[in-house]
Length: 162
Image (cartoon, rainbow, N blue to C red):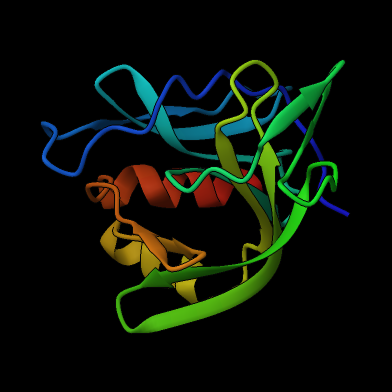
């Protein structure tokens, strides 16, 4: 089961021709470590972990929208199935990729799609991410490729996660 953590609203997915974005890193001692990539004020990628847990939760804004209707607080897709919906999420760094079982959730207010996946800090693609700062996410045929993070920041985040 994918753990849920507080998450700031994905305002909208920025276009591929947008200006470069920026990574921000938060590693408080007694709270989750958070590594976020945003462009034009919209969060596109957020990685979070409990300190020394060895697990990272990925939240990635996806252009493809599955939410069709909202009934009360529940978003459903065109078939009437409530969010979240099963999805494979492929994470790639350098020449290493892992396809994980994940989900597509609907953002509470807008219904925008957010891909969710969880991985161990020992996953080979995360070791490459620590070296290069580069990672892409592929969900439902869409590849999200944020600008590379500073490799020192990537390593600091991974160390905080255990």
